[in-house]
Image (cartoon, rainbow, N blue to C red; front, side, top):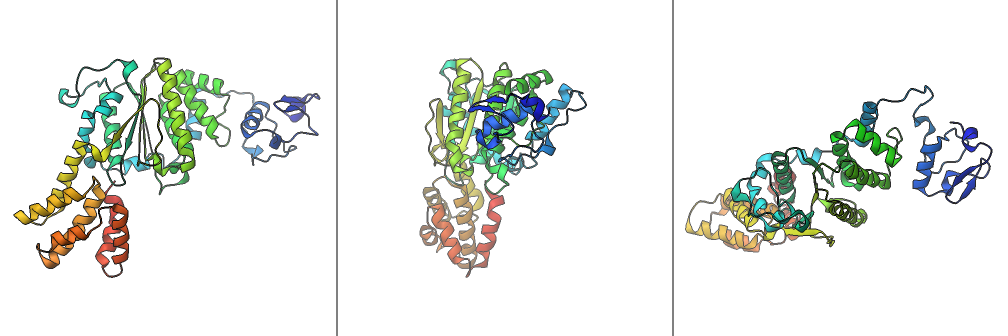
Length: 403
């Protein structure tokens, strides 16, 4: 449609007044309204000044008059949402590392969030299951750096996939060392939407696009558009139970975390009001702390099952023999560890080096001189790197050893 036919000599009636070809620029409108009106009117002939860097050459060509098929529209939508690194962080977490995490299934907070398991062993859950109205649709797993939260989340994802056939399982793992989309809210929404759209029929996608007013051929997405798509997708797919896992919220842009958390809270409230089965599991460090109405919390380092795993990890990593003194040193590590796997890995490596140099007798004093706080331990390692090349190697290996 040309600008002449769109204006039809009378101007365009938009929020903010009536505009014609002489007095109109897109920058006069809020971004969201401008984007929607551009799509509706297709006025992209370069005559109007565009402050949003929209390239008119990227406008879909409808001149042939041949409509795209429903399947083509679905694939176009998926193509516009996907990005190459979408599942990279999840796939980097070792499956073997996730195996000792079954203690999660026995946690009271987890059972309040997931009260109706499908195919779990009786020993994992405590009956009876509460009614849906008494459950907490949001579970927020918090823990210190290095406590294995991402490993725990991968276990929870895989367990849900195996035990809940026919349910939509959606995942996104933020990654601070990844590309922009891996550490942004936009990337998270796009990742979740890829799963929602993939599970939907072509008829449901047609309804989603119709109600949202979006066109997958348009260039780029705004956060508002993505949130609108997520909300509408839940409405349209209302008969399908959904479970979402979003890991490492603290690795997202800090300014976006609060708004994202409140959006999730609103989604669960909307689902509860309509008796829809939507459960969301979040994981992050302890800060920023955001209180949500329908959330239940779980602190990793305080859970008995996690404490047992850390104890076993100490035994597995510290090879200093089986003498009474060696056991006392391991017990001292268990007393000092504060539930952090990375601390155990670093300290065990340092003690192992000293054991090779000076035998067992001096290890207790060396252990007690090591900071209990992980950040302080990092500072000490950096300080000692120049005099001890072995510590450079241990630090460089750390990111792939512990998650």
